[in-house]
Image (cartoon, rainbow, N blue to C red):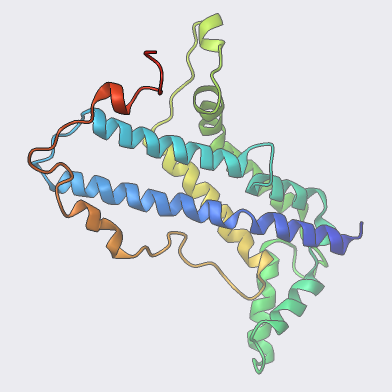
Length: 244
């Protein structure tokens, strides 16, 4: 394969990360909005099983999403960066500059184009023909330093059931809300940085998509109407035929 083929493959790998990473920020915005609703309404009992269940669903989904982008397998962001660091010559300044001139910048003066071209220097020494792998490895190290504890917990307590706590009496070290938020932020900021390499002359603004305010309408009315009866346990929750 040529370096051009390698680069196209990298672009494809990087592009596959977009929806998953944006989803992390989308879901966090929804969760924080729900927490704000709960905090603003003293009539809602707090700390019960229902709130715990909502929190567990949120955290499990987020932890798996983070590991998907930063795990050792698959086509996540971390793997994309590792590929970039191992084959730095595939990302060239010549390609970058040519893309700048093709992307709706017709008529820009030489100074403005030079400013766009200089964004490549975030990934390489000035005038270097291709990116600096050491800079990519530094970003990898910084990302791993943040997500290592989170991913270890996900692997041993969420995605798998590790028997280390059984054999040695050492349960998985739990993560905090700060750990979770820090990992989400690190993934998003790293993705945002390399967006400028993947899309010359462009930059990714906010990471949290603007959701339609209509999604909160379901919370405007009480979920449990007067006279509501709980579903029958045996008819609605157990597998069919369990009592046959």
